[in-house]
Length: 73
Image (tube, rainbow, N blue to C red; front, top):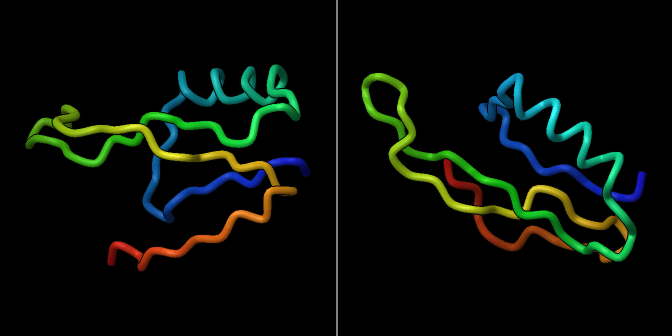
């Protein structure tokens, strides 16, 4: 395919976000190099998000992007 999706093994995609992602796949054009999506990384005891930021989640395959940082584990 034209894009590579980056996910961690423990990532969870919420039901409402699956619908948005499917729509994004339909609308995405090849003039886009990367897609930044919200990445929730901190949660309180109730599961409420306390820290989030945008991360690259889709990268155009033809750009030959390489991961250069160590894994967070």
